[in-house]
Length: 145
Image (tube, rainbow, N blue to C red):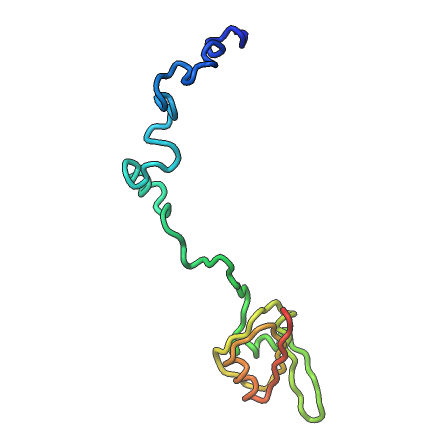
């Protein structure tokens, strides 16, 4: 049917296009209301069943997380020195340089004990880790990571 012959052409000047008072035809087809209408009233049971996390927020996910994706502990340094270390000789003092940043580690934590002196390169480290390395006669080189 041609658009010019349709009933809507006749009704265009009217305020409601044949649907009576304001809102009588509005949102028909949306049973129970538009959008999230009734989530605490008549759609409460469906909200509990299908969208249990609808309200509130997850406090364990801060908006700007500072994520350390890979870390090592003091107890891992001996194994990492074998894999990633290289020797440095200064006189009769021989210490191993362990470059944790090149190995992909972003932080050194202070758990465990250190067996020998190392020179450790790492972007970030815990205060207890730095104390243990220095107590064993080692050295810490922090890098920008």
